[in-house]
Amino acid sequence: MAFIDWVLHPTELWAAFWFFMRHAPPDEKTVKLQVSGDMKRCYDFLEMTSRSFAAVIQELNPKLRDGICLFYLVLRGLDTIEDDMTIPGARKRHLLETFHEIIYQKGWTFKESGPDEKDALLLVEFDIVINEFLRLPTEFQDVIADITRRMGAGMAKYTRARVESLEDYNEYCHYAAGLVGHGLSRLFAVSGLEDKSVGEQLELANSMGLFLQKTNITRDINEDVLDGRCFWPKAVWSKYADSEEHLIDRENRDKGMEALNEMCTNVLQHIPDVLEYLNQIQEPSVFRFCAIPQVMAIATIVLCYDNSRVLDGNVKIRKGEALKLISQATTLDNVKRTFYRYIEQLERKNQPDNPMHNQVAKIIDRTKKDIARTLKGGAPVDFTKEYLVLILFFFTITTFFYSYLTEKSSF
Image (tube, rainbow, N blue to C red):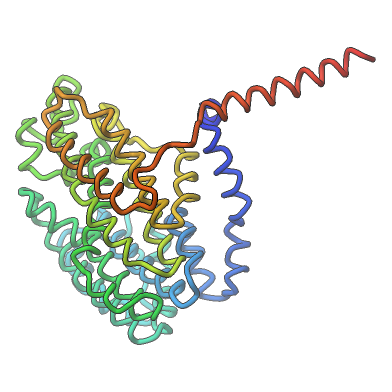
């Protein structure tokens, strides 16, 4: 199947080739970063917990790289506690509400994670993260601690509260991801790599986080329901199902699809803010760091839209497609072209009999007009010509084998 994907999408194969040429194995990366001791172990944790984030963090400007690595690990530790369903409620809430103080406690570790918690080792050796956190400049520590405090309080709230309304949904996503956008924006500014105004555009930063978080929540519905939880707001799913389990039941598939498309539509509303935020970012490594997750998200949410496979299990974009997106997320114009391309895919999927058709059509129309107006050269034209490349690929292979067989028959 993987081979067929590469053949049908040869430009993705080319992108994969260049990606693997440019990116060293994890051990080589830490050598190139010129880190050792505890900080090297922190980058090891980064690789263990998220290979995708590790790649973009390690390519950041040195003024930001260690700080954002540690910011990510602190929040990953917090998130690991929130996700662990084996920790008693009162104990979990206390940990979440005091985690911003814990990160100042030298020697603190946590060995109470459940047996299936994949990131438990991070908490077992969390004293290493704390040691490096305490070596950061004070202004970095202040931002990380403040975001950890606010996020922990929000997570603690939602260990008891359910996501009932759309307002709850936006608030939960703010705590889970919007605050990450706030923290990153403030770190960009205090590092001096971006203008101070970037650290003040918190509504746009919040939308950056919500676009990612809502995409993941929408995509992960099957997995979450089977795990006994659901982050889709009841205000949405209760219109289409009697329970969260009924939402993914095949006997209720038509209504489940309507709920899915409404959730996708909610995600798509954040696109204007995402593009406006990226327009502010000037430093190249910071831009790539911000842009790569966003292009992954637009590809994922377009894949999820009107896709019944989402209700049956987790769907993901192709690996080659992801590598191609990474390779192209280098400039604002490239990102706009990527969004435009996926918006055109969405337009083809948005059928008139879909109850969300009109709302989605408005988002499509606005996005295409905004991009066409601001993109150099106007609306992009797809010059990829995947199938022309495919023909050339087969022609090359055929020529090779013909030459080989001809030469062999001459002996």
